[in-house]
Structure formats: C-alpha cells, structure tokens
Amino acid sequence: MAGSEPRTAGRSAGGSSSSSSSRNELWRLLTEYFTPRRDCGVTLPSGPCGRIHVKDKRVQIIVERREYLHSSVCSDKDCETTAEKVFYKHPEKRRAFLEDGIFRGQPNPALVAKIQKAFTDLVDEFASTVKPGKAENTEDLPVLYELCSQRSCDELIYLLEFGKIGALDRFTKEEYEKVMHSYSGSQAIGHHMSFFMHYIVHFFIGTKLLLYNNVEKAPKLKWMYDHAYGGQTFLPYQRKNLRLWMKDLDVTTEMCKAAFRCIYLYVYWRRKFEPDYNIETDDSLKLGNEEGIWLRCFQPG
Image 1 (tube, rainbow, N blue to C red):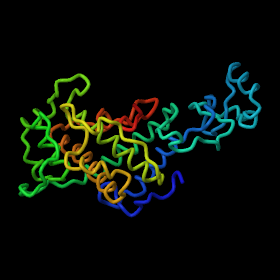
Image 2 (cartoon, rainbow, N blue to C red):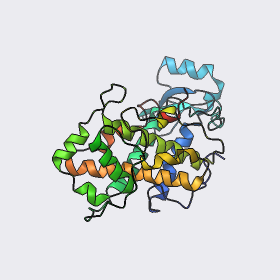
Image 3 (cartoon, helix red, strand yellow):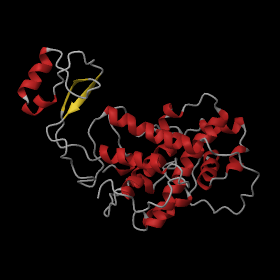
C-alpha cells in the first residue's frame, strides 16, 4: 500500500537510524507527488486561514461557477492575503502510485520545493557528520567492474563507493580541480562527475521510493544503466548486481546504501576544497526543476 512502512523499515538509507523521521518525511512527500490528484484543481488567493480570499471580480466569478468552492470562502475582511492555494473538487481522489508503471506527477512548485529541501537536508545531515579518515590500506578493495576513460574520476568514484574517507582526504587541490573539470568529450555526457552523480541520485531516490511503497512489479531501469558511453552511470562494483535489482531486496538495499554513501561523501569531499560550496545550488543533486520532479533512469524509451 502506498506510503506504508517500507519492507526495509529496519535498515538505514545511509547506515544510521538517527534520521529515520526525516527520511520517512522525504518518502512520504515523494509518494504524495507521484500519486497526484485526479483533478488539477484551481489556484486562488488565500491567507493564514487557508480559505479563499475573494479580492477581485475574477476570483468572484470562479467561485460562483464552482459550487464546491462556496464553503471554502473566507469571511474575515481583515484576513491578509499572503499566498495562493490549490482547491480541489475531490481532494481525496488520487491516481494509483506507479499506475501505468511510470513515475508521473503533476506540476506542483510548493511540493517540489519541500521534497528538494527534504532531500538536501538528509544529505547534509550525513555529510556534516563525516569525520576525516585515517591512512588506510586500499589494496584489498575489489577490482573495478568497469573502467572509463577518465582515470582520475574512476579513482574518486571507486573511493566514494567504498567509503574510503582516508584516501579521499589525501586528494590534493590540484587533483580535485582535475576531477571537477573533467569532461568526457560529448555534449550528452558533459561534466563527468555531474553526469555520474545525477544518475546515482535518481537511482537512489527512485529505488528507495519503490521499496517504501512496497512495489512488487517495479518499472525497468532505463537502458543507459547498461552502458557507460565514456561516463559512468552507476557504481562500478555494484553494476553486476543490477540483474538482482528489486528481485533480491537485501541486494537492492545494499545498492541503495552504497549509492547514498557515495552522495553524501561527494558533498563532504567538495566542501573540503570549496569553502563557498552550497548543497542547495548543486545541480548534480537536483531531482528536477521548480515545476516538477523526473527520475531520468526510470523514464520509458
């Protein structure tokens, strides 16, 4: 059932149970977004009362023509108009979550803003508690499952995936600049790390949302997860587990943990070299635009 406790309720998205409440709020908001109301509603001026403010002829005509709005009019002449609100004829009627096997939502700037903030707050919480690592021996790490042409990026992604903080801390400013200015030579791929992080973020959000809603028949991942095209679109070592995605829930949960660890360590790493880094303006962590959210790797075609 949509919005029920996830099958992985006892597991942490990032390895800690301290932010369970904030995580559930994120998945709840996302579930609300992807189960839009069946009618688009009408946007009208409102205030602290949450009711309709009939301030001009246009609003008056709209209300007069819709009987279901009559009981929602504010009668307090001194109530200040502070915002706009969407009023629905049947607010309880929603589309089924993943009704046609595709994540679909309706433009809702206010809800999108809440979701984006909930996500960045969650990432920020974990990134802010990362402690500088000690020198480590990385010789026992698994062999990369895939290699791309950008070797400096490969090394960074490798360390992010396995949470090797000590090795991350040994990067120099020069090495940082090299990675962050690495391009794969294609306009479709663009900036290597942004391209990689974009897909990891969308994979994490989409997969955790499916688990939260107990989806039995998950949509297919977009085909570019099977290819790199000069830029990685998935965690190198975890790529081999994609065949078990949403089939083996333990494996799927571990993939989510690895993806989320990669996300917040990426933020931690950027902050080390960029004092003015702002997580809220990092396009790599955007879930869509101001109007809507789209999970690219789950799109059809």
